[in-house]
Structures are given as structure tokens and as C-alpha cells.
Image 1: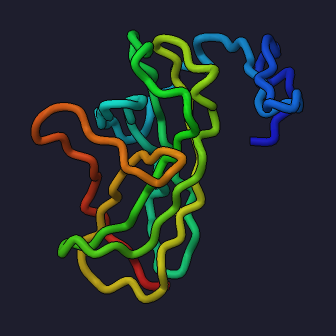
Image 2: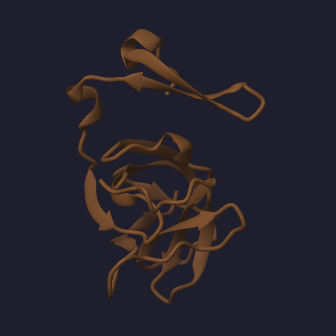
Length: 171
């Protein structure tokens, strides 16, 4: 969001690129600013990544629209095993036959170099709902990938990395 810095909190640390340019600015926030619960809770754990603890999604989904999807993440208490490479959050629309109908895979908004135990962060993704999406239930599939495009494995047997079903309306 493009909010004034005094609404966000107090800037405490700049995280820079290798050339010294500011990549991100960390803010110290109050508990009420940080502890917002996601609309839809999840627990998608990745072997080498943060845990997806939930998402926010508009109430109505329509073909041919771009929707804001907010993903809520939490860094594990022991994050020493996590890679420090660039990480991408991937969200894919899937039909009930497992076919993909659109994907978005942006770089994490909070770079791994700044991760601390139990940190929470949110990332908003613009997700396109294709106009040609067929009728029927649709699911959101969540993945992480590294900077070479390799998917990060899920933790635990039978781990679920999707949400839904959702109904998509025609416009």
C-alpha cells in the first residue's frame, strides 16, 4: 500500500541491494498493525521456506477480472535452515481436473536476508482470472520456487497446498 510512513510505523532498518541502493525498509509496528489475521486460515508448510498461514480474497470472483489476493506468511522459529536466495510465491488457478488456468509468481516482498524468527509478512498479488475459464469449481494452488524456478517441497506427509473450491461468475 502507498501509505504515509507515519501510518506504517517507525523505520528501523534499510535492506540494500549489493550496490547499496535501498531494496526494502523495515518498520517497527505496533501489535495491532502486525497481528491482523487472514480472512482464510491455512497452514501450508514448506521444507525450505516460510509457512503460508492464510490468504485474503474478494467475496466475488469473475471471469476476465484481475483480483487482489493477499498471502500471509510466517517465518519459522528456527529459520537457520532456510536458504538466503531469492524466493518466489506462486499462485495458480486450477480446475477440478488439475489443469492450470493462470499463474502469478512474484518475488517475495520481504527478502530472505531480513527474515527473523516468527516474523509475519503479507504480500498482495494481482491474480488474473481468465475470461475463458470453464464453468465448475476452481482452486488456488500455492507453491514456492527458488531463483532457478525449482519448486520448494512441502513439509509433512499429505501436505495440502490448495484452497477452495471457489465459484467464479461470468461478467
